[in-house]
Structures are given as C-alpha cells and as structure tokens.
Image (tube, rainbow, N blue to C red):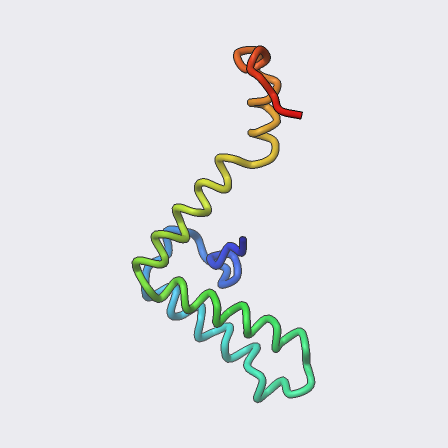
Length: 95
C-alpha cells in the first residue's frame, strides 16, 4: 500500500491547506506539459494524482490513516515477535 502522505512529502497531521499546497507544488514540477518525454515524471504525476484523490476527501483521508496505522502495527517484525512469544507456543498450527 502506498503512503500518500509520503508521496506528497507531508506529515500525517497535515492540514487541508498544506495538502493542497504540496499537491500544487509537485503538480507544477512533474506535469507532463513541461516534461513531455520524461517517463519518470509521468509516473510520478500519476502517483501525485492518486494521492490527491485520497487526501482531498476527508473521509478517504481518515480511512487511509487508519489503514496505515494497522499496517504499521502488524508489520512483519511484529508478527514474528508474536510467533516467538511463549504464550503462543502451545497453540495449534496447521501444516
């Protein structure tokens, strides 16, 4: 899953105004009109537009924040620590 705040270079506590300013700044830089032959700029602009779609909508933004929080809480290292926890050693595992 893509962290749209990172795409725009923002903190997760960014205000509506900060999100809008970051989008405009990056859109000017990576828009295809000034970069007609740059494939990297085109892919970057696509990611910026995806971030805009999510972060400009307050409901989608909060869902995205919640999803990122869940992803961080259940990272691979956290899951491995749970597997090695002695409280769970005697539970059944399917093979």
